[in-house]
Image (cartoon, rainbow, N blue to C red; front, side):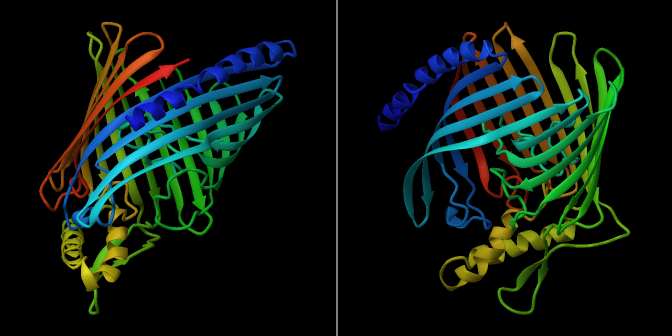
Length: 433
């Protein structure tokens, strides 16, 4: 009941901003200023079944929630005047979660307000553009992940209802002609983006070259971390017919920041080798895929992914053996030694743990002018574990969407996808004003 009352109270704050935006829009139009706004409110409830494994014994380390309620107010604003553009995406969120561990039961809630994205952009001579702000920069045709992107490997497609956090960028863009675009991008601060490397933020600078042709497009990206690795990435997509297109994407570096387990002669008996360098070998992810659109409407994507920085069979055996040994001694005197290594094991700086993967997605949109269905399956071909995700979005009317998401992981105790989560589902509503 308390969460329902909070939801109603927060929803009551929607209407004054809508009225204010309409009045402000009319006033600015008289000055030659264009203001666009889109206000959305989203709420969802989720339940999760947490895996009780050596990586998270009794859920004492990761403390994942088994129940969650999120309400978000997501207004988007954009303003333009002559050659100047400004974009702003403030967010207001209420979050409640329930956490069960072997040491106790916890309920906690939190309200927050923040700016997820903003950008100021200046156009010079219709060909040059300078911008600075906080954004989510996504690109590439791949469905599972974006290996060419040095800023966001996760493209947010597995769960479209959780917003990725923006990072801070300084950008310069040159539109040479309708076919070629050149960009300089500097990620100057972490912003609200996740730290996927379990380390302090490291500034990344990139050069991006884009080409758009009649039957396809492609891009090359060169990036360098100030105190880290240089990376080369790229992607292309080619349309072969009205129904079939093929694409590829990859990202490679001479070295890898990944953690690799090894045995030590002193307690706790394990450690990680980090920051591997090899000037004669490229580490990274190669992805090839195709998309076929059936005459009835659904689109099928099939992708094969090779991650040569991922664990070999022996490295995987060491990885799971380390977790089993540390997890069994997590309680009592073993806690201090086990926790840091298990925390590193949770994110060994690899977007994919092993080397060979198959991904399949079936997307069917606008079923009876109302329903969108997405079915996704990722298979680890090395350990035979998998991840299945289904997403349903029902347009009740032009302003109201109901949605549901289900996730199921399968595999044995020494498999990638069941290290932390067995299954999860969520249901929610999205309102647009």
